[in-house]
Image (cartoon, rainbow, N blue to C red; front, side, top):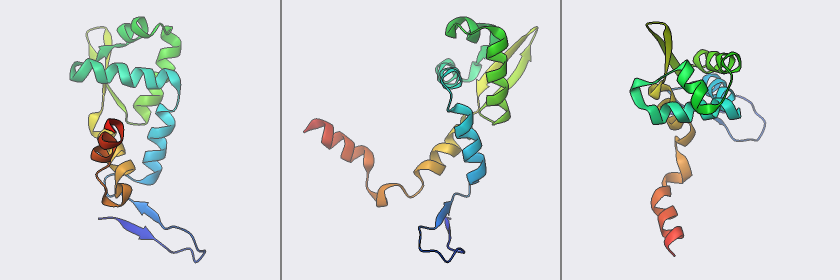
Length: 127
């Protein structure tokens, strides 16, 4: 259920709120991934799947020094984008797919006045 907040009497669009994710959390997640290295980390870990990757392997694959990577991993973990588990001496990071899914739902809630955007996009590309 979407609630439109029209409490401010100024003539403007109401704010939409998604039951799965608060606006403040969406902003926090977007801020966390709105940095090149962090976005690269998320994309790499999405490719790695639910097994995730050890911090050392992420560092090697992205060519980012450990200290810098640690800073970025902590920011992503704090925003709830990544989870971490210990495997022996390694820290293994995985994407929290439920958080990414919540963000996608938040961003696309009531998208495009009910138009099937994917179908429209395919028609545009084909013709």
